[in-house]
Length: 143
Length: 143
DNA sequence: CCCTCCTGTAACTTTTCACATTACATCTAT
DNA sequence: ATAGATGTAATGTGAAAAGTTACAGGAGGG
Image (cartoon, rainbow over all chains, first blue to last red; front, side, top):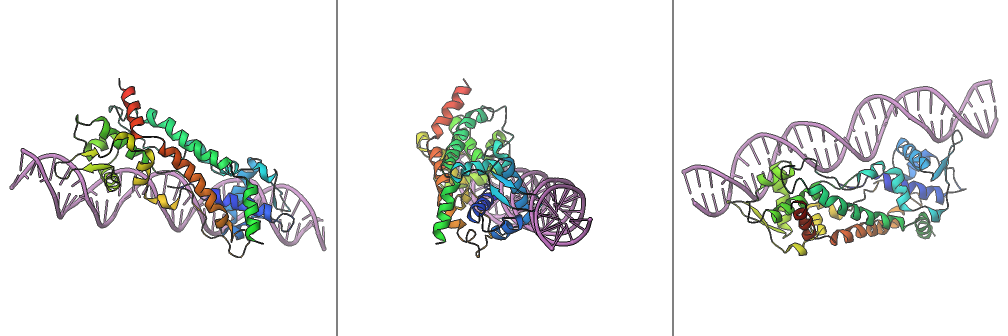
C-alpha cells in the first residue's frame, strides 16, 4: 500500500499559496480547482495545516497564507501535519503471530527497531527538502 | 496509508525457514500457523519469493527452503519480491491536477524526483539489514 | 443591515484495496 | 493409488480513502 495522496495534495496547496501570493485570493475553491478535487477535501487539509501552525486561514473574507518562511518549512512538516496516522508507522504488521511459536512470539521484538530505523531514514530525507526548493522549481518551469 | 503486511509476513516466513531448517518441514500450513493467517496467503507469498530467487519450494512432498546465504539476503530483497507495486512508489499522487494552472501543470515534474529520493533513502536503509541479523536476534530471544 | 462569499464541520455515499476464504487441479514420494 | 503438498482462480468481506451534499457561522461591502 501507499502513503495517501493527502500529502502530495497538501504540498500542492502550499505551493499554490506561495506562488499566487498577492496575485490571487487562495480559497478552498481556488485550490480545489488547481488540485482537481473537492473543496471539502481541501478545507479539511487546510485545518490540519493550520493546526500545525504552517498556514493562516481567514474566516469570512477567505483565503489562506503561509505563516513561516519558505526555507523553514520542510516536506516532513507537511507530512506530519496531514498524515495523522504517522504514529502508527508506515509498515503494517500482521496482527496474530502465534505466541506458541519461537519465531511468532519474538518477531515483533526483532523487527520493530529495524523498521523504525527505516522510517527514520525516510523522514530524514523528507526534512532535507524545503518548500522553497519546491517553489523555486515551480517558478523555473513557468518562466 | 501504509505498506502492506505482506512485507512483514514474508520476513516472518523466511525467518521461520531459517530457524526451523532441518527440524521441521516448513509447509504453507506450518507457516500459516506461525504467522496467524490463511495458508493461501502464504502460498502466494511463497510464489513471489520463489520468483525472486530467494527460496525453493518442493512440489508434491512440500516444504520451502532458503536458496542463498542469510548474509546475502536483505530486507530490501524481500520487500521488492513481495511488494509488486514497488514500481508505483510509496507515495500516492492526486491524479487530476489542473493542466491550465501553472502549479497544477508542473507539480509532477517538481515533486517526482524528490519523492524518489525519499524512497531511495528508505530502500538504502532496508538494504543494510540482512536476514542473518534477524535470525540472530530470534535465536538470542529463544535461548 | 443584510447580502454575499467564504470557512468549519457533520453526515453520508462511493470506491478501492488488502486480506480472507473456498474450491479444485496438479504434482510427487511412498 | 493415495496421501499430503503446492499452484491458482474466483469470490467474499471489511476497513480505509476519497468524494459529495448540506448547512451553520464569521466577516467585509454595498
